[in-house]
Amino acid sequence: DAGVIQSPRHEVTEMGQEVTLRCKPISGHDYLFWYRQTMMRGLELLIYFNNNVPIDDSGMPEDRFSAKMPNASFSTLKIQPSEPRDSAVYFCASSLGTSGGSTDTQYFGPGTRLTVL
Amino acid sequence: GQQVMQIPQYQHVQEGEDFTTYCNSSTTLSNIQWYKQRPGGHPVFLIQLVKSGEVKKQKRLTFQFGEAKKNSSLHITATQTTDVGTYFCAGYSSASKIIFGSGTRLSIRP
Picture 1: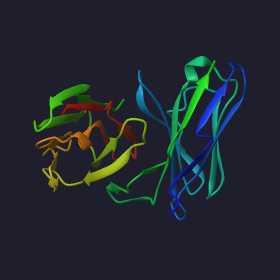
Picture 2: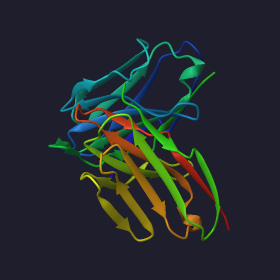
Picture 3: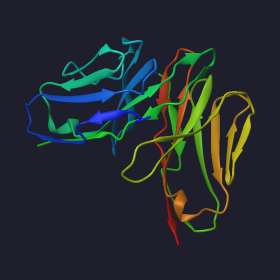
């Protein structure tokens, strides 16, 4: 199994540009999560999907951020327009699903390091 | 809103010393998970605790879930240089909210 795949691994862009981050979850996993990690704010959950449907997007910082999951094997996180404060490592994770009072292990991708100049 | 506080933020120990990190939630959790992130890497799942008062061990690592299901701890006995990294707890509420703790960064003097 290839694990969770993210692209690009590094992205450097200028303020005001559109940025699109991509994620391919582990095959068969029903849940997909997008996280942002910074030194100041730690690891923050931005949004997660269940069976391609957004379940909780309360962590999305503002309207400049949007996420889509058009099918079970692909998701995007878009920032438009990007700002320097968006510089962070963005992780995608997937899991099999939740049941009862427990949740399944989240498998994280390698992350995309975004730098907005 | 729900918060998960994790302490300490940093811990620097001599190799062979013990290490403990604590997580405290403002609300009762349905379960809690622990992850380890090596420098430059991504979080990797360590363990999940579900039951009140549960204790689990993985070699030198001991994980506990409080009786009230609002706190948890990770204890490492006799640290080794391979233990270096940041340890995160992730609390899950009954409303399917997921909150990661701020992490404890462990560094070790050989």
